[in-house]
Length: 151
Image: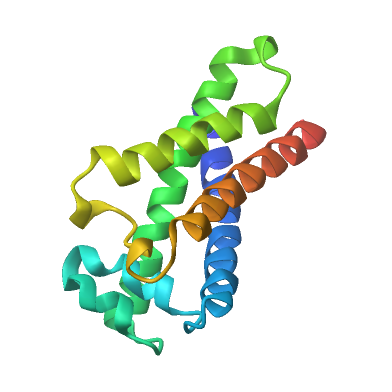
């Protein structure tokens, strides 16, 4: 169990950092400030106006990143548990990560109430959000491959 928790924390942190970087770049491509998607995630507390905050600050940026990071670790824990349970049955970390990422996107944007979604739709088009979930999948798969090399 300790190993699973450490792997979830590690891969979740990598996924969080990678997706935050992707969101920042995609925001810039859309003519927005790089910080806006992270601020938008704080809409859980501040409402949709959070996505329109164009500068880093503690109430929006810190809360947005903490929520995003916790979410990434949550999904990484599910991914790591699933990979551990499947063991030799699955030889494709990327395939598993893609499936998990699709489930995460479905849960985030269809299952949970809008107020509990990542909030990125306030700032970014659906295509950018999809690319962010792909980034999450690649980050999870990459950390899995790295962890297997160390084991």
